Length: 398
Ligand SMILES: Nc1ncnc2c1ncn2[C@@H]1O[C@H](COP(=O)(O)OP(=O)(O)O)[C@@H](O)[C@H]1O
Image (tube, rainbow, N blue to C red; front, top):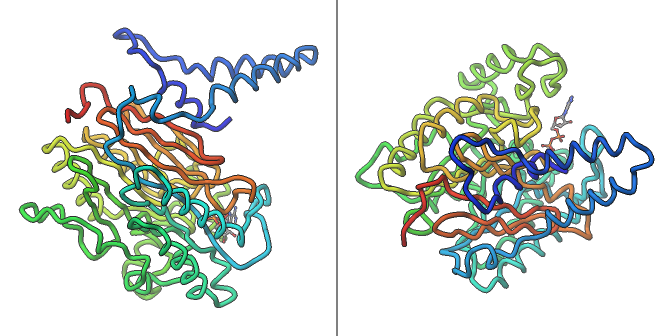
């Protein structure tokens, strides 16, 4: 049972709650019950029965059956942490999860075939970062592996928006990435009469409008980072200072003993400059009654993610987002396990299950179907379906 399922049942509530009444998440009640049963040996059969019930409840959604028969306005694909390498299977750092380095490319091919075959093509695919694994750098095959994965993406009939994760910086410098095929900023939209919504070149972020009234914002979660930047630059010095202030460990990748365990070298954060820009974009979207989808490699909401995986200054990003009405969801990768939670402001946080830790007999990608009142994530394989209702009184009229 993932963190996400807790909020999933809440989000799926088919009726409004009476004013002042608090939603008690259904699955937490059931899970507490199961936990109780598991402590009573004689009731183990009941435990299995209730687990089976939960599995049925989490069965895949049919977007059409949940959308009152109406057609989606448009859809888009999502995929995270492909981490391809031409290597035998391995394990994560904790040795708790198998990594299928070679098979990740086969998973990508499968996802692309599915997206290409969909009745109505998705408008685009959002690639949530860590496209190739850091091991490629050790074997000096980073460019070759990237080429292979990008050639696979060539089979896709729609554009791909690429975010950058820690493994991008294990393989390449930021300067290299800016000039590479992983820079999809050429797909951005500009709001000519609002120059404040144009991102600076100091970070890799942009926004675009795949469908009228829907704006997608791609964020740079390694804008503040010690990875991939020139170690003699003032920005490296500033980021290293920030990291060391929060992490006294000799091994800066270790979160051991930290009160803010996200301050590890393999994470990063958002500069104030980028957050100011995000604030301007969201202000524009609020004023123009747009719905916004935000994408980043690193997650920002603790309820939906392992605390070690969060962006350094995730709280700053949340306070910008929470000061606006327009944001529907925040999509991230990095955790590999997946996670979901709807925050108190009605923003849905989805951490997508990573391809790299997906067994060959499963899958890990999704298509989000967008309706005037909600977005429905149709997950494949180990990605669960999610209903992401818009905040009440915020339904779009078409
Ligand atoms: N607790 C830890 N202590 C020291 N190094 C760690 C720890 N956790 C992760 N690392 C290192 O940090 C890097 C990123 O970890 P990894 O689990 O590979 O992340 P990812 O999921 O992004 O692949 C790797 O180089 C890994 O060896």
